[in-house]
Length: 624
Image (tube, rainbow, N blue to C red):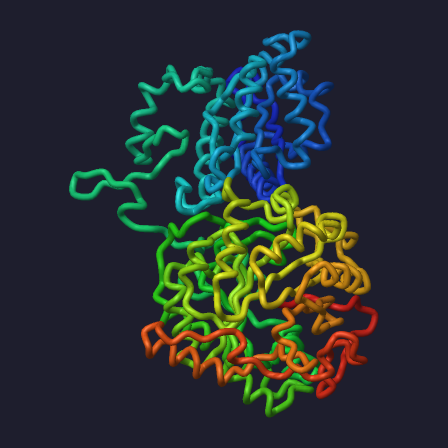
């Protein structure tokens, strides 16, 4: 009824000017697909038929030229790694590019085709922002297709996004498209001249463009990106100069909340680790309990920065967090972040009061966090006040386990003492690191190597964190050995990748998850190549092993555990002396229990707890 009421696709004489709208999408994470579905519904409310088409299911060679009737084609295309099309759009884009320069098709091959393009990208990927959208628009134009609306661009970088998020960018463009579609359906002819592709002024720009710029307050900065301007006291300023945006957009807040995050302020979060729940019920602790003696039921997993500089294929957050190469958002004070983190963590622990199986003594202990794993998501070291946050943790007698993704070497060098500092070493060669981590920095490899050197300059405990992805990085033994020689870490954690379910943002499958025996074999070969290192511990139910430097082996016994009280005394003395009184990793060691050692019958499971496995369910080996 609504569609019939609003039907506008014909004029008085009954001529149909728009027979339908075909919406093509190229999507990797599902965003463009969602936009296509949304646009289809909006078009149909106008009484105009709409069809959503997955580019991989469409043969442009046979069918695209047939769309030159009275339909309108919309292309919603995302830009993937290195400016390439998404997997489902690869063939379509390849064909379109070749056809645009192939004399056999001719430059009028798509004459009469009416189209509009909206590109999805992220401006933090400097050099290929929205490349696919721009190319599709250009190639269609070169084949004489007629642009009915100027290209729209959605930016996943909330700092530079014209409307605050890629979703808001799309909806602003969608309003313009629907308005233009109504005009076409009424038989109006005026449209974009097509000169926009080379930067020349559009015929309609003089009439409408000035007004549009006045309304939107935008300015082209010369690199093709539009920067929002605001007027204050008669002076135009960029939004960045006036006020920085919040990292957590409404759409991001909704997505992360659904995943169980408790969000804090505008850029932080806390979440209850499954191992915290497990140890509360006496069902065993995480690998950090086995390797270093933390009490998993007293560990708070948090981050002061949800943003990251990588888009790793094995990210267990499915890339819902923002990305960036520098801090460009509003910043919350460290005191507020810690206060809210502790409060929200405590509230989550309280939900276990009276739950069957929860040990009363562990419940009471769990209310007071003793350890903080800064590895929840994102890159904690990006937070400008990270040192203040660490000092606050230590002042509350909370140990710090900070994980960084090896892209910020100077920030590592400037860090105050950390209980244990991690660097994720996800690959050992430039090509494999680019393939697995998909870093944003162009100079990611020199940054990576410099981070390892910076780690080697630290006096407190340092760790390389290796994640094995079968068929991707398990054959790089010699290269790994060379990286270990570069940073000389105290410990090397080697863990099989955790499969976190199907994600359109990653091609990872269960086939990439190595068996525990395969991880053991890799670690044994690696340890044999490393002078002064040996296998110390094992946590079989996390598919993880620990290689330790032999300086932690005293009189034939491993001392990989941490004396947490001793660390707090040492870090307090360091602060009281203004940093003059230093201390080293060997100053706060504790003896490793026999059940935690590699080769023990327990395989790293604390005999004080009871092993529990759900019936008919694949073992969960996830965790921090």
